[in-house]
Length: 202
Image (cartoon, rainbow, N blue to C red; front, side, top):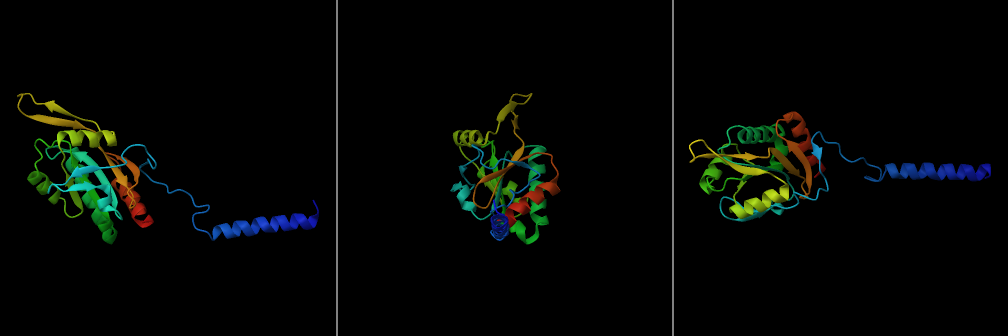
C-alpha cells in the first residue's frame, strides 16, 4: 500500500472515530448499577392486579416513572415495614426527582389485608405508594410471574399464621421494562443511586 493511501485510510478512520463521538449512544457504555441488573429478563415482565379501590392496574399506569415493586403483607413484623420505610426515605432523599418514583406494594395475604387495611398501611409511608390486592388466584399468578415465593405458616395456637416470602424489590424503568433486582438488607444509598440513575435516564 502506498504512503498516500495509508495516510488517507488513517485519516478516514480518525474522522469516523471523531464522528462517532458526536453521535450519542453509538459507543456508549451500558449503565452500571449497584443492584443486580436483570435487564431483558424473561420474568417480571407484567403486573396486572386491582388496587384498593378495585380498579385494574398495570405497569403502564406508571409509565414515565421508575417503579419499585415489592411483595409482602401488612402484618409482616420486620422485612416489609423496613423495606417500605427505606423506600420512603429514598424518595425523600431524591428531592424533586423523588416524585418520579412509585413504590407498588403487592399483598401476598389478601385474606387479612383488606382494601381498608392496605390503604391505611401504605398511607403511613407518605406519597408515592400504591397497594395492590388480588384474589388468591391472581396473587399466585403475579408471584409466579415475578418468581416470588410465599407460603402460609400456621401459628402454635392453630388459629393465627404468618407468611414466609421472598424479600426483594424489582425496579422498572420509565418505559416499563424490568431493570433491577434488589435483595433485602442492602445499602440504601446505593439503592438510591440506582433509582436516581434510572430517573435521569428518563
